[in-house]
Image (cartoon, rainbow, N blue to C red):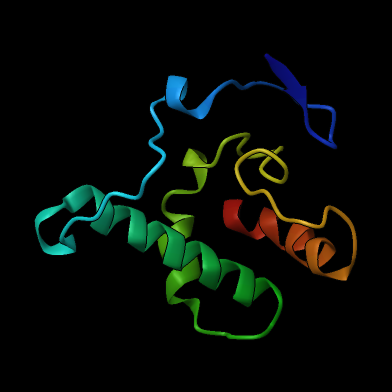
Length: 107
């Protein structure tokens, strides 16, 4: 099954179970799972990137962390928005501030 994003990017989708997802949440200890620790770090740093872009919080630590991984964003460097970083709604002041800020990741 195929779909198309609002930016006209095609993607493949299907039943979540066929893609390895479960219908229930799994829990584990963060202390014993380095992958979850790393994911938590990335999610937190991405949140700080968005806050930094919105001038809500000017602590550069999260921005500097995510800047070290900037090429890992899907679509980097030119098409991060809508691919590696998806924000809803896809129009308005919020997304425009973030969109204008993204090039600073690659400076």
